[in-house]
Image (cartoon, rainbow, N blue to C red; front, side, top):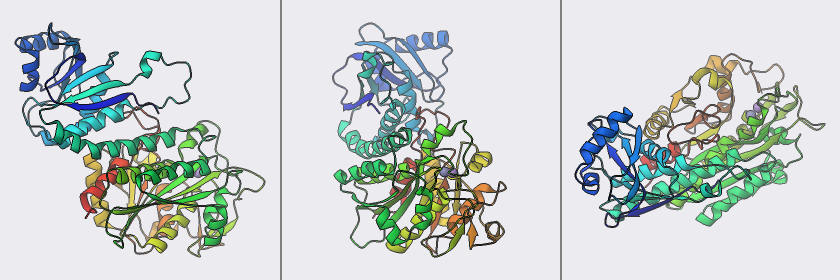
Length: 497
Ligand code: MN
Ligand code: ZN
């Protein structure tokens, strides 16, 4: 990606630039601070412009006008924050996204960090900055011709606040999270000829710079450990499979870690159960779970979270080949249980089965959350609004739901149960990897649960949210980086000492 935005924080003393951004309520009243800058006549100017533009100050809406003479700016960008009321309920990241969407051709903008009717905290202001950055993200690494040279330069956005020190401090955590989301988006957007298991592992290894311990397990080691379910998926590919373990030690040594596990199928053709051709290119995103875990580990390390956290990602490529796994094959997973392969396109659960077992067995985590673009069926159930949440633990589920609402990365809990579990019994082995169309997301989750012991566990099916999801105020990218903000918030809310 290219950084299209340079963020700065400054006091209110000096003025001047291309765009001046202010926030107004639905009464079109600007904040006192903004009024001071615009001078007398600000009210009349805004009222006339709003009438001409039918601008009502609705939250996240915007209008642009020529700046008044002597203001020191070319344009005035007015962003609505809606009716007076509980500003704590305002989504400040979304507000930042709205600001970014209105920045024009100028190379600089000043944002007056003040609300018309309430104080704004440093954390809320930092969330605006987060939204600005997330909205400005562009993945254009492979565009050689279409960009104007002018557009390649970053826009400098200066947040103008009476208390720059406080905002700079709050910004550190936000930048860590924004960096994590950007890493996840980059990984999902990369083409599959560039990003294959070994390359993904190399990129994860870059987290060592932040103090993350990174261990890369190659096929020889995976064979020795006994991850035969995972290796079976990758055996049709010329690219070797990898498992990467990332450890961030931000709490006391010996404190039980929290664990995040990601499905990283760098390309999923379906294998011998080949997918139809239309839309297959999207299967480069079948590693969005692993991308999220990698981005999350970046966020936690970059903001020096006081937690011991482990990220484990299973990286394979699922290809048809003379050596590929067949429907009918029976493999023994790391747990010792046998699996009959019914459909080689139900490969993500085979990867996760081994990685989940390995993670709980080796690291004895406080909880284990896995993310996977696991089933198309989750889109049938939930569209692209929520990720599917499956869990053996009510407390963890509740905490995820709360963090989801706070970040806008929402989850919806789906059922698990004995009747569903029975659906994956196999005639020839302990279980089968596919039980047909009905309840397809649930039977996939049941399969995962057969590889989880009493560890509190949650599975997030992100097939609808991790890639190709509808654009939003804070995301214009195909790879959304979904889950980084959610899980960072979960850790911050409950698991830091
Ligand atoms: Mn598949
Ligand atoms: Zn898949």
